[in-house]
Amino acid sequence: NAGVTQTPKFQVLKTGQSMTLQCAQDMNHNSMYWYRQDPGMGLRLIYYSASEGTTDKGEVPNGYNVSRLNKREFSLRLESAAPSQTSVYFCASSALDRGHGNEKLFFGSGTQLSVL
Amino acid sequence: KQEVTQIPAALSVPEGENLVLNCSFTDSAIYNLQWFRQDPGKGLTSLLLIQSSQREQTSGRLNASLDKSSGRSTLYIAASQPGDSATYLCAVRDDKIIFGKGTRLHILP
Image 1 (cartoon, each protein chain N blue to C red):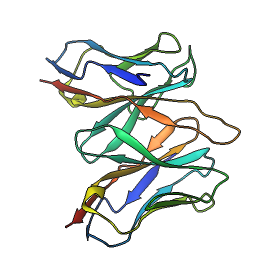
Image 2 (image 1 turned 90 degrees about the vertical axis):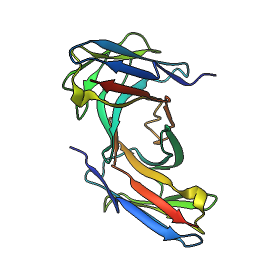
Image 3 (image 1 turned 135 degrees about the horizontal axis):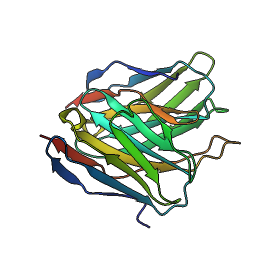
Image 4 (image 1 turned 120 degrees about the vertical axis):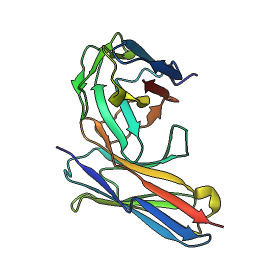
């Protein structure tokens, strides 16, 4: 059981280049998330998807796009990378039992992205 | 808009002491609150989850409490050890999951 798989683990881009971060989960979870983490800032939500076919903006969506390709996969795209997007990116997934508040959140191992 | 705040941002205590980490949130309409641990350069590990109908959860030396009406949660760590040194984050769940900025904990041997 792989859980949440993120690729790549490391990436260096030049300003203006584009790239897509891939995320896949094999737990049949409805909800998936993309976060970025910067020193002293905690995790900030970029985009999330509550279910297949839906996506919504989080706290810091500017400069990013997402695609919920199917229930398993949720990708994050940087169309024109900027140095301010240098960060560690985490994908996560969860299945919420709304009636009981039961949930377990699973994280990928992260992608360290540097934009020069 | 839900906001999650953790105080203090950093904390150093001698080994063996009991300590409390604080988390506050602005909107009490949550499904649950979770506490996570993150070691440097690593991902997040879930420690405890408190459902909105619960008041506390315990796991070993860790005890987390939740007071929804006041928008507060605490993580109590008993008999701290150097291995407890890490960043601790709380997160609340409404339609999405929002994290606090974390408390960086250092246990002095």
